[in-house]
Length: 118
Image (cartoon, rainbow, N blue to C red; front, side):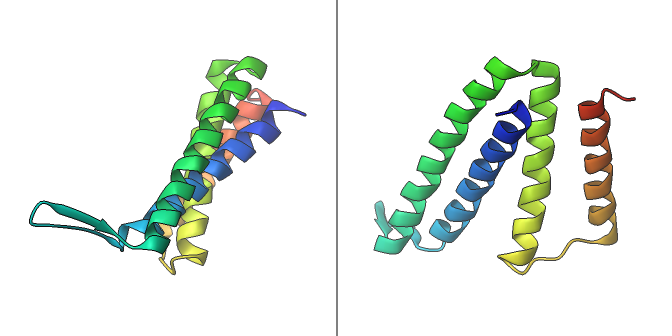
């Protein structure tokens, strides 16, 4: 499989981890020196940490398959795009016009990197 596939998969795992941790944060309480976590929030937190672990291992794979100068910017760009889409569709957040322009610019940058600027 190509490095592009692994990059997309790692970015998806990283974005999934962020979403799970967002779900977890609502049930974590710290009061008077005591930390309490709801059961489902703990499940979300552990799931998020596992997703981060998978993304970490995939990143090692990516770096063995692709040039650093290409892999890292594309990985970060995909994570930015996936996180923006997840925020819209899962959390009901909105992007401004400037945000959408940013997404398009990032996509154009990825296209330039992947095609070598040709």
